[in-house]
Image (cartoon, rainbow over all chains, first blue to last red; front, side):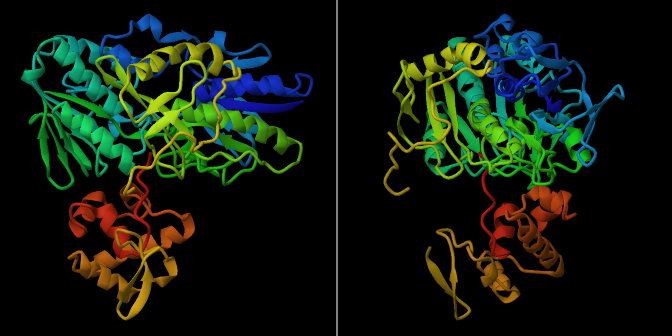
Length: 413
Length: 104
């Protein structure tokens, strides 16, 4: 009996076990997935939860229901991975041996890594929305908010869902407008990037959208600390930005056990070959989803595309063949822009987000990099796709590879 | 890729003037690049630049400010003092390395 061990039952981990259980004969392969959680959350829902568009009921489902028959679900947290010995040690001391290991422990917001961030102001005037608890706390804060300085802040790249900070800025702006207090709120978007987004064409379009909503952009901002008494953030180059409400995206890091295992980089993301997702150190170790250091977005769509390819590569590997399904960094993201509209962006390692159209069967074609009602509806509809098609590993008629079909490069770019 | 004449040599650069060929760089060129952006090089500056060069050779990507801190041992605060306002960009420029990839 050969043993495949998967750590983490988030988006990437659940798709992995669903797809591989179908491909690997039960008589030859034992599959185990380890995760401490009882509930699996639809994480894009946190954003909607924070601005009161979703109720908590819409966000989570019991994890056990998402794991197929024939896969052992071990409810536990991992203490250490010892890749040289092919074992994983759980926090209760249990040792699990494996022949192949897939790390899918994602990325975790770490407010503890910035001085003053998770101190006495945390969940008071300093908020975030990347966990269920954070999203609920922000919702309660926004409900009572009567005006003042709102700062949406990104600590450092990479972060999970790099468009989410823009979305929370757009949605909060729409929320304040709806409540009739927009004129009492000054909004600032603070980013370590030189502009609103990472790549020039999208940065220009998204920057315009912030401008139209009277949201000031503070670029190239590397935070040093949150000053709890002054209620302000300070950058390494001494720029002080005061706030009444700080909505921050803390530093993102991979699991601490990855750092201890020697498999990771300085942020504990697993060093992988970006095309095959194989560890650069051990040939029987892979990472999927946000847990890798692949230079693409940390997002569910990336996990989706990776896992259209990874199971095929895995079957080749165990058959002693070369892995030929090379991942191109493809990512597709809906961006909520408030007032019932949204954008869609589609890109890869080599191609930045461009305007044009994107073929989606039935719903589409969707407009790229342009605010439309249909893109918003697409984002809402995606929740059903997520639970009923994506996680169970069913076929979704969208290519894992980025295509230039329908895309246009604006003049001068 | 465009080329540029520097110190009587032709070097390959991108649209923002970052060197694109690792081996076309040497310390003399580094000093010239530093002068272009108004950085007066000291021993401390050179230590950081040497780390970036060495790290690039082994990693294949330009180190981020976090990596220069965590692996190189040069605190971010110091990086800002040595290369004011935009340390990541300035360090890469002087070291003749690609601009650090804006992560997506």
